Each structure stands twice: as structure tokens, then as C-alpha cells.
Length: 58
Image 1 (cartoon, rainbow, N blue to C red):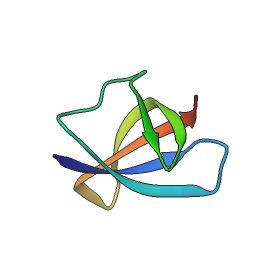
Image 2 (image 1 turned 30 degrees about the vertical axis):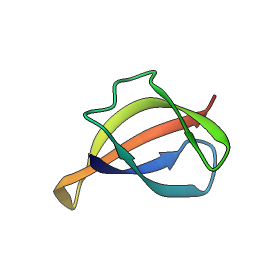
Image 3 (image 1 turned 45 degrees about the vertical axis):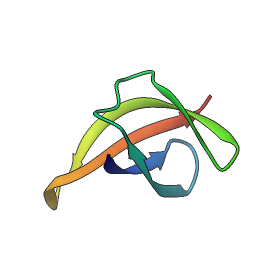
């Protein structure tokens, strides 16, 4: 499991979510009863080893 920081597009919401493997673009996942879709993966500019992705509410 790899923990990613998830930044929700259009919302002031950031949370951490554990994925089994590397999440692909358009992957949907559920967190606290809300379904999200991965839109992009990125690395934090200040920490190249961090795992960050952007998602939108599906």
C-alpha cells in the first residue's frame, strides 16, 4: 500500500488515501462515502519522494 496525498479539484479539501499500487488516471475510489476520480499524479515540489494526486468528485 502506498499513501497518497489527494488534492480535490475545486474544493478546499486535502486528505491521505492508501492505494494498492500506483493509481492510474480516471481510476475511481471511495473515501468517506464520496466517490472520486483521479485526474493527475504529481510530486510535491518541495519533496520529490512524496506521492500526490489530484482528483475530482465523480
